[in-house]
Image (cartoon, helix red, strand yellow):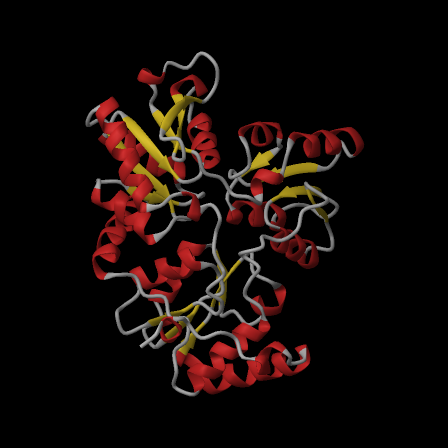
Length: 368
C-alpha cells in the first residue's frame, strides 16, 4: 500500500461537469430509491441548492439528535461541517454510518483549539490557579476537544443554553475555561452579570494569559476565555452598526452572540440561530432587520419573509467559505455511491474519544 491508497476518494469529473438541472433530477431520484435508509439533516447555514433536499433543518446538536432518533436510517448524510458530522457519529448508534459529502467542509473556529493545545493550556492554568477550573466547550469544537472537556468533568454548550450550562459550571468550580469562542463566552457571562474585569483571555499560540480589559487582575479572574472566534461573525463591526444607526434608524439590529462584545452590546437583540429565526418569524409585517449572522441564512430569511425588509448587517458579507463547501455535485455523488453500496467520506470518531466527548454532551443534556 502506498500513500495514495490511504487518501479519501475525490469527486469524479462526471459530477463536477454535470448540469445543475441534471443534478437536481438525480438527487430526487437517489432520494426516492434510498427512502428511509438515508436521513439527511441540513444546517441552517448550508447552500440553498442542497438544503432543499434536507429531511430536517436546524442547528448542529439538534441535527445530531434528530439523526439518532431515526433508527430506520442506516446512513446519515450530514449537510454541515466536520465537527457536526463528528457529533452525529458520537451520539448515533454504531450501526448508523455518518457521511460528510465534502471533507473540506470545516470550521475555522473549531480548528482554533486542538487537543494538544488544550492539554498544554490545562497544565499551565492549573499550575497557576490550582484545581479551581472546569472546562466548558461550545459544540462548535472538534471531538478531541469535547473529549478533553469530558475527561475533566466539563460540559458542552450551545449558543441557546450557554448561560444555563455556565451557571452550572460555577457550582462545580470557581473558574471556567471557555472554549473555543471567546465572544460567546464573554457575551454570555457579561449578560449574566459578570464584569469584564473578571475575565482574561488565554492565548493558545503564545501560551499566556492576557487581561480582557485594562485593570484586570489576572490572579482574580473567574472566566478564562480561549482566544478563538468565528471568522464570519467577527466581520460584523461597529462601523456597520454605526451606518445602520445613521442612515436607517428604524432598522433593528439582530446579531448572533458569536459577534464581538462591542457589536453585541450595540445591537437591539442578540441570540442563537434559533432565536434569530424566531424573532423574524414572529415579527410584524414591515419590520426592518439588519442581521449579523451567516449570509446563507440571512438570504433564506429574506426569501421566506418578503413581508419584512431583511439585509445583512455587513453589506459586503459573503457566505462562510468552509460551511459553503457542500454543493450539488458532492451531494449527488455520495448518494449515488450509497445506492451502489459504497461509503465515501465516512466520519468515524475513535471509541475512546467518542466516550469522553459523549460524557461532555450528556452533562449538558441533563441540564437543559
